[in-house]
Amino acid sequence: MRFFPLAVLTFALAVRAQGIDRDSLLTDAPAVPAQGTVRVSGGATATQNTDNGATPSGSSSITGSIGWTPLQNLNVDVGAYAQVGASGPAARVRYQFLSQSSFGIDLSGGLRFKTVGFHPDRGELEMLVAVGRRFGKFELVLNGVFGVETGGGGGKDIEAKGFAGYRFNDAIRAGLDSRLQSEMSDQEGATPIPGVRDYDLTAGPAVSWMLTRTIQLQGLVGVAQPKKTNVTAPVGVVSASIDF
Picture 1 (cartoon, rainbow, N blue to C red):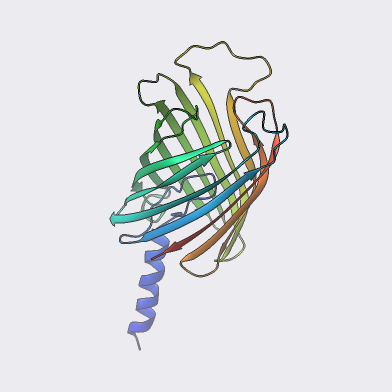
Picture 2: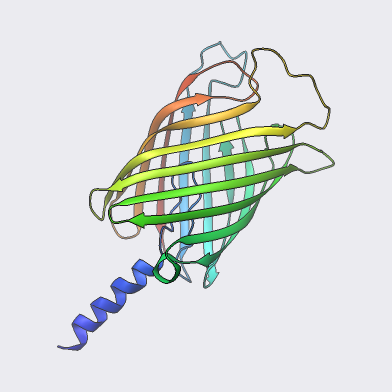
C-alpha cells in the first residue's frame, strides 16, 4: 500500500516536468512532449472574405501534423502549415534546453522549414526561440522567430508570437493568442505600396479543453490583418490533437 502514494507522486512530478508542451493555435510551445510521445494534430482556419476575392483576406485552410519525441527533449514533426491566405508542407525540429521544474522556465529552440513563407510563392527557413512559465494558474509563452527565404530568395522577416492564459482547472484554459509577422527586407527591393501593410497579424481570445489526458480541443475567434492588403477581417481557428 505504501507503493501506491509513491507511484502517484512520481507520476505527478513527471507530468509537471514536461512543462508547457502543447502548442496553442498560434504560438509554439516552449517545452516538448515526453520521450516516446507521438502527437497527431489537425485544424482549420477560416477568414471572412471582405473584397470578393480581390486579396487573400478571405480564405479557409486545413492543416495537420504528426510529431514524435524520439529522444528526451528532442521533438520533430511534419505536416501542413498555414497563415491567412496560403498553406503548404512544413517540417519542424525542436530541442528543449531548460525546464521550469529545474530552472524556473521552459526554453526551447528549433528550426522550421515551410514551403510557404511571408511570400506565398517562396519557401522559408525559420529559426525559433520559445520561452514560457506558469505562475500558479497563469501561464505565459513568448516566441521569437527569424525567417530567411529559400531557393535563392533574399527576403527576411521577423515574427513575434505570444500566449497569455489562465487555467480554470486541469482541463480548461483560456487566454489571448497572437502572431505578428513583419518583413525586414525584400529580394526585389520593391517600393512599398501606400495603404498596403507589410506585416501579417492574427490575434484573439482562445480556449483549450483537455477532454482526456491525451485528447485536446482548441478554438480561437479573433481578427486578422493579412499581409499585402489593407483589410481587417474576422478569423476563426479550431484544432484537435491526440497523443499516443
